[in-house]
Image 1 (cartoon, rainbow, N blue to C red):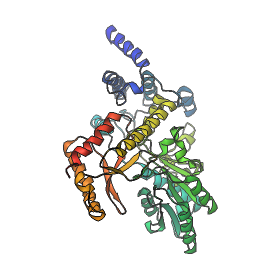
Image 2 (spheres, one colour; image 1 turned 30 degrees about the horizontal axis):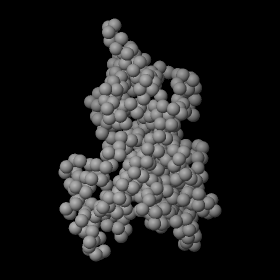
Image 3 (spheres, rainbow, N blue to C red; image 1 turned 90 degrees about the vertical axis):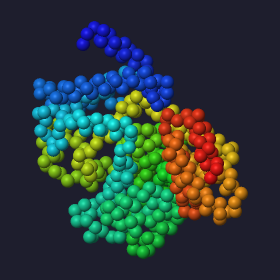
Image 4 (cartoon, one colour; image 1 turned 180 degrees about the horizontal axis):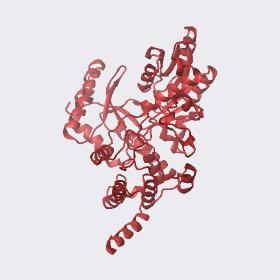
Length: 475
């Protein structure tokens, strides 16, 4: 590398020292040059890593004991954002201690090598952000852990000695709770839906009625799923009241906060999830509200060691106990999967860059955008809200074209059911915007607006409102 190249690198580093996450896309639409410089700096690190990995003279591993790595690496989550240069240095430091699984002399696993075409495919899918799965697997972990906690012999002998178990979940909960009931052998029919109120929240008194009825019918109630942000309406169940019922009847409380868990980062709005600290387990998807790329899902369990007890298979060809370091750091035997994608690093590096304050500002701003959108459509002819004052980032509404507004209730409902699908088809044809729609019980198809993209501006929301009118006015 010549002198001028070194000088340019130094100048770029100085520039990055004064730039932060909100100086680049998507938050700063005029920040392309800084964005490009930042991404190229990280890509240069990766190219150097690839080059070194394919050199037989490079070490396969720069081994350090876990306690040594803790001492060398600063893993703390800061309060305030850190500069982009610090983020680049974090990446460089982490790469230094990676096992080089693509090294020609790495023979440790069934999956080895670094196929560069496959790597480019991974970069591409990460960039377009269309990967799966998400919170469904976290909910499965929670149900399985709850069953093991209550009936540990199931792991060895299955359900033959287990009484008829009953699960309870909000009727507006994610379908994966019922799916988990099927997968662990409890059965979909034994997962009882609990009615919700007009705001989409589980009704605690109905939960207790169902628990009592299940006991009378010979079931053993053992698991309740409350929701922290339902998929359609964004409702938060009354967790404190549900927790009291769970304690009374000795049931495991799981909170599916896949969507709404990020609200805890906001001191102003975290009251929506009051009581979540009483849960035995929580599903949380940073790839939703926090904006991490798919997939990034967590199942948080407050019973230490339970995941090991529940899932550990002690495969001695993988999880040897005589390794030259403290094997308590090996988390592989906690998991249902063997080979797994590394989903936590991107969350850590995001959090390092934004700090607690950065994420709090992000959540607060999204809530402000949602309030703005709600108030705007209240004042715009043709728009009708499903719920007058949504509490979260889901705003559900109908757009009623002029030709439909004067119709009687039955005919209006039938016509309205066709409006959202037609507008959505026009959106996709023009490519101007996209939004989801669905029916719910006796309600005809309505739009579900989700405001979770930090790049969204007030102008984008204004455009969306006008675009719906443009596409739907003549229907």
